[in-house]
Each structure stands twice: as structure tokens, then as C-alpha cells.
Length: 335
Image (cartoon, rainbow, N blue to C red; front, side, top):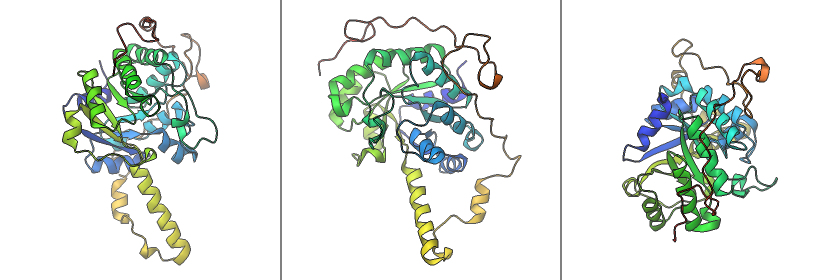
């Protein structure tokens, strides 16, 4: 049986309308998003890297820390599904499966699986956008492994091919990832109505997801109805709220340092803050952090700390190559 969080995400993808998904980073921000009426929220690698590690988004947030943070959000979400970044699934297909299983145990309903090749060159401030792409076939194999062995979590397959390689390569990869079983496709950087329309035509029935991140610079303004007509079902806003919170905190700190007058600081009233965070017993306690995950272990071998972690089940056969580096049945479109 599919988990409730995954079912909720898949229901949004199949609803025929657009849903905006904001980023959260802790239980308080998650509670604010739910109170604002959002139907899904996102835990991004950038938010975890910044708020847990004090680092920029250079692929430094491991799956275990994202899963651990996600596990604390459940009581605040009141059933609203959580999406989370998964980079490229952390190495090969078996590690991708373990990532998905850890996310599933943490209550995550969908993971966003990219096709960047690991972390960028140190010092490259473009973040993960400065890393090269995984070849299409191994990227599709990760998705196939996930959908075969971890079906209780939805998969949003992201490709970053468009900015450097154009629409043809983007369509090729999107078709491969959809054929491998992805629930939805996120073509990062595609912001042109004609190109979105061609992607929709190349992926009949496949929901599209758009990313609206401040890290990518100004984005085209779309009407929700326009995007929905082009097959877009989710728009992710991973950084807007955390950047707004950092801006507000910076202003408060400067005001205190310069004047010592906290009355000039625009802030949430204390009563509203305490109401945001219910007393113990109002909600079930947050789950304990999930166990550390890593490459598959054979059944019977102890995991970290002595915990018994069975290895993942055998998955379906890998797609056969076609001579183009793609799974069988996926052909390059002449775009």
C-alpha cells in the first residue's frame, strides 16, 4: 500500500491544477506554512546546509541530515505532505534506494532527484549548478531503482540540462526519466512558453514541476492558469521564506546593535509565537532521528550503532541500452 504522504503528493500531481510549494526549514516555519494554507511544503538542501551546517549550497547536506531534519517536521505539518531534495541520490542506484527509504521513514512524501554529478568544484559559488551532469542512462537507472524498490515515495526527477545543452537534450532526458518511472519532471531553467509547450507535447500525461529559486535570478511572471494549461502542477519556492527570515533577523540584529531599542523591531507578538508552538502533549512527539544510511548491506549485518538494517530487496532488471545511452523505448526527439 502506498504511504499517505506519497499518496497526497501524487494527488496534487494528478489534480489538474497548480499548487505552490514553499520551502520550510524547521518545525516553526513548517507550522507557519500550514497556517497560511499551503497544501505541500519543501525541505531544500540549501536550507538544511544553511540552517544546520552554516554552509552554502555546495552539495554538503547529506541524506541523513535532511532525513533527520524532516523527521522533526511531522507534528507541525498536520498531514500536509513534505517534499525534500535528494541531489542525485548519493552515488549509484543502491545508494539512491537507501536515500529514498530513509526519506520515507522520516515521513517525506516525495523526493526531488537531480542529475548533477556530485558536488561542484570547491570555491564555485554557483553551488550545485557548477557541477557536471550525470549521463542520461545512469541517471535513469537511479530512478528505475527507486520506483522498483521504494514505491512508497513519489519521485520528482529534475534535469539541469537546459541552461547549457538546450531543449533537445532536456527533452531527451525528461522522456528517459519519465520512462524510468518518475511521477513528475522538473526541467530546471525552462522559462519559455514555447519550450514548455514542446516539453508538454513530448511528455503526454506527465506532470511538470517548475522551480522558482532566488539562486537562479529573476524569473518570468506567469499566471497560474497559464502554467496549469502547460501541464505544470507544482511550483517550488525553496528559498523565499528562509531569505525573508534572514533579512528580518539581520534588520533586528542591526537595530539592536545600533540603537538598543527593540521597540523599533517589527516582529511577531510573543502570544502569537507561543500559540504557534503548542505545549507538550498537544501533538505527538517528534520522531527520533532516522538511522544513518549508506550502501546496501546484506541481510543480518548490523547497521550503524548496532541497529539491524536489512539490505534493500532485489530490484527490477535495469533498462537495456539502445546504443544512444538511453533505456529501451526512449528515442531522441528532433527538436
